[in-house]
Amino acid sequence: MMTIEQLSVRYGPVTAVEDVSFSVKSGEVLALIGANGAGKSSILKGILGLVSASGAISVAGAQLEAMPSNARVAAGVALSPEGRHVFPQMTVTENLELGYVGHGMNDMEDAIADMFALFPRLKERHQQQAGSMSGGEQQMLAIARALMSKPKVVMLDEPTLGLAPIIVEQLIDLLATLKRRGLAVLLAEQNAEMALQASDNVRVLDMGRIIRGGQSRDLAADPGIRASYLGM
Ligand SMILES: Nc1ncnc2c1ncn2[C@@H]1O[C@H](COP(=O)(O)OP(=O)(O)O)[C@@H](O)[C@H]1O
Ligand SMILES: [Mg+2]
Image (cartoon, rainbow, N blue to C red; front, side, top):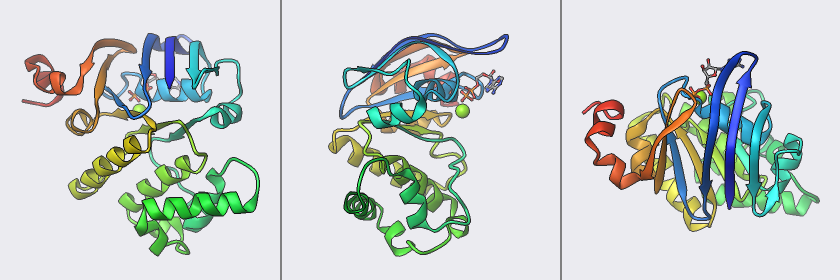
């Protein structure tokens, strides 16, 4: 569904990502793990066109690298950003409306109804100001907002950051649901334990480069990965 070839991201003299290539299939969760500063967010932002990047990005057969960000979203890629960034003064419903990309009120209402089916908690709180909700609820709203554009590929940047274990379990369940719906999911996580549990395949990043990759269940059993990333 999405193929990335030789993606590099530079901030002036700083090379944040160098020659990264991978692909994500429909119904697959691919995890990017690595320490703080490894380049995970820069990859996601480079894919969406929020930072300048070189390399090739294809989503559902379309080449994205020359498109502005909004066209990339229309082509089927969406990002739930690190730090969540919901609009705190706006209601849950208004936040969802901002994620909508398309034509026509009925279609938008259908998309909101679909998100309320996926996240019953957001339905209960639909008139509440987003900023008054818990961190876990705000994270679910940030993901739902990304899903409002009906993406083929959804990218989640550090969704578990700062959240309680019970919410992390809910996020793992959500990933299983998104897979069943046929989405391709790209998950960036410092929480390697969660990422290895919730993903099919994984790429390990260090200083902007992929240093390991494979099936999540294999890497979760690898002594080197366990020592470096799982603290075991
Ligand atoms: N806007 C920026 N300007 C300059 N350097 C940046 C910027 N954003 C990130 N970096 C640098 O790029 C590298 C990768 O950062 P980032 O992609 O945020 O990593 P991660 O998400 O894995 O923590 C780090 O060295 C970071 O300091
Ligand atoms: Mg990051």
